[in-house]
Length: 128
Image (tube, rainbow, N blue to C red; front, side, top):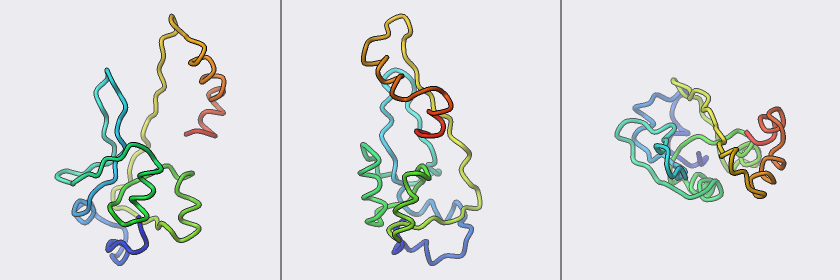
């Protein structure tokens, strides 16, 4: 969150009832056929839904809400003092990530994407 956010002044770890008072910055789930997923949204918490991580980062920096993001995306902003990381009483569990495609109709763009992402080890290390 932004270093100017009111929660920064609170004792840590932060409880869910403290967090629920502030909007959660959420990315739009792009699922078309599967049920859309929401990760880290507390009961009765308002949400600000954005289309991508760039927009989410801008919202976090502006102090418009709170939320979680992949550590590799937050590290530089935290190091520059643009964002702060706070401890939670109930830390978020790891969120599984799935990539799915139809193997019977693998198109050249899908093949290119799979080659670009690499094998399972590279995918885990570099992208997730």
